[in-house]
Image (cartoon, rainbow, N blue to C red; front, side, top):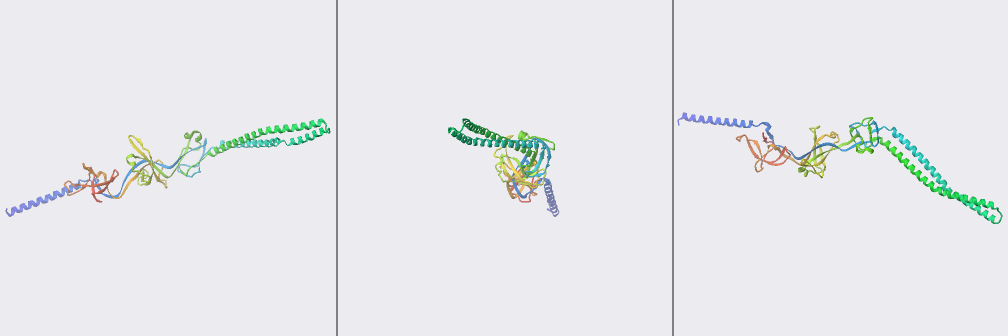
Length: 398
């Protein structure tokens, strides 16, 4: 081979090598550029949680519907929605004019019954004295003296008859008084009963008057006010649950969410477990709570059995309001300092071995599969126990 031919071959080889390098570089660049940044997820380090979400409404720890014990017309309202009241505070008052008149009438009846009782007691005292017959002994002694004098012919028959008549009259009065004594005792019992009845009527009238002032039974916040001045209200004592609702009170210093958990997860839910509560009103805030009640019986609906769970939340600032829709995330497991990737990045082979794809410029298509060992997942994120390092990138499916 001549020197010129050698130079030609050598130059051609160099051109081919340079072309191949340029092609390879451009191919790698294309492979890397083919990955949309939105398809790349970074392996992060953080706390991995396994949880279950129960959705429900915010409810006060204590809620009371206020209804009146008395019938009447609302004359005054002392509180409005949002006011905080303590037990015993006046909430509303009914018109009391008729009720005061009934109290006066009942008081007059009681006074009349008490006067009747005093008269009956005075009568029984008189009959008691008469029933003892104090003049019988005197009349008997007078008769005995007259009889003695008559036997000595010192007293005429008329005087003896007069003494006997006086004795008989005294004995008759004593027997009559003894009979009247039983009647007088019965009248005292009757008068005593009349006093008791009149006193009960007065107490009932006074209670009805007191019931016309509606007071708070608990400390709480006025959640609703369902009447206005002039509104008629019916008594709960007469109509029960159908009685007029005056207002609703609730203690919202502590609230709870009552949600449902699927039977698949309920076995891992325990009393005292921590929960994170979110509401639409405060999208960027998480409220802390804990499981305080787990229903012992499930409810089946559409072939799915759910168990009711109560999650209590401290609410000292009263940001959480009654009837807000809330999601309570019950923390079943907590693994701090974990490597975390999106679950969508994980694929499985026929043997159920887990893999992820990572960018690889050295690979023909710019990616390669990496076997990973997974821990817990929550439906969107999963824990990686081995196979990846923090900061690496994994590919998400199209």
